[in-house]
Image (cartoon, rainbow, N blue to C red; front, side, top):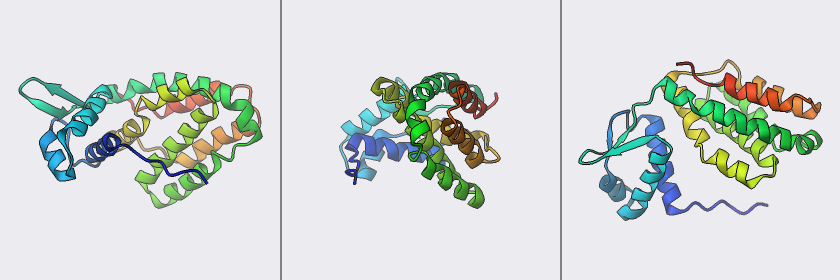
Length: 207
């Protein structure tokens, strides 16, 4: 059994803020007060400040002198920018992972099954969670730590959730699309890299 994942305090605070943005607790343009978060979570302001810096690097928030930190007013164009970068990374990952996943795709299968259930129940949160988990396992299967780190740094889960919540970019069937990718690995499709790239680009919001 794999050991439980232990998140640092900074990561826990970051997840708390991200959840607040995705859920609409903090709306676009609204100020996020560092001290208030520290009091609410009963922590010092230092890890809150560190978490906010990370989210600013992800372009989710912005800061200005004498104005504090605010949630960015994101547009469809902002959200769309990440997809060509992500598609290129996942194209490389798919080509590297193909030999491994053609032999054993069991790391992807549970997420496809979970997506069928999420599609049936209309569970948007589960759709986001298992879509991102599917792609994370695909990238992880490439066995390239630099590639995985670069992909993780894009904040895929956050941007996917925001695309769905703010722009309504809901697909008809998350499960069927991901099962098609899974089957392409199983049949050793020589075009797997291009198929994965097209799949990711097809998920992009349209400005």
